[in-house]
Length: 81
Image (cartoon, rainbow, N blue to C red; front, side, top):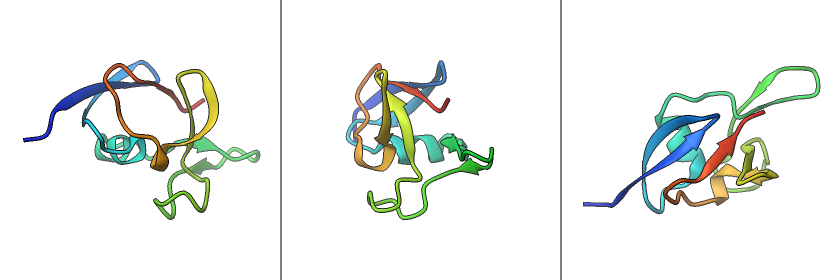
């Protein structure tokens, strides 16, 4: 059985498997808006493999990180704003 970790998305604790991507954990938790476009439209992963950049979130204070390319680690802080 895979080890479980907790990441925090906008302060909300999300349980995830260690090694799962941040995008997968967020989608599994029902989070559908990862960011908003300049016109205010909610955006979410499209390709899931790092090509489209729609999964960009702030991770550990670093903006524009691709959630589909970042692996979950215990205590990881993620922001969608």
